Picture 1: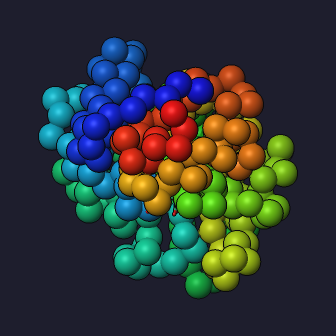
Picture 2 (picture 1 turned 60 degrees about the vertical axis):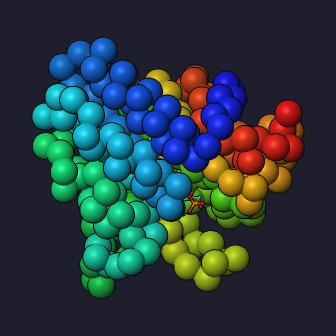
Length: 225
Ligand code: 6PG
């Protein structure tokens, strides 16, 4: 894992955006980008949308999603749509939410769609965040999805939140070219410390073939170095 410490949250967003733009620009004819949910990556997306990128070659998907309607204020897909997707010409693949679907059915449908999108290639870049408890994507401590080694995308009930999530699993994350994690603020300092001690789900990101870059600000890194 590579730890890249930037002065401010804005510097983190600028660095992460530049890194993604560089990788898309230097790639071949097609590129896949997994987006992180939560609030931290919004600033990155708002910079990324103004970069001179050939978005028509990019397929974008979600590393996780809350089990809520597409327009819900907690939807990661809705945030991505507003902060990035509505401003660019990339193809955007969202999990299906429907009252007639179970989270597990939706996750299985989404996995099929991801496998078709990837056509046997590894994901190029997957952006992620980290929660105060060290979760990443929707791989929360003590939840079943942490153990999943066959499926790429599953439903995951999170008792500590009392909600269902859909999430990429470690096999999919570990297969990526690059996992790019963004974290800012003192609220993430303890999570980063325990993560770099290997004691959190986010600390497991380094257990596969993917390169892992942590783009963090000084506050988030304050207990790591
Ligand atoms: C989600 C996420 C999750 C997020 C962390 C950090 O759906 O919540 O994908 O893994 O990245 O919880 O969230 P913040 O960026 O809001 O701190």
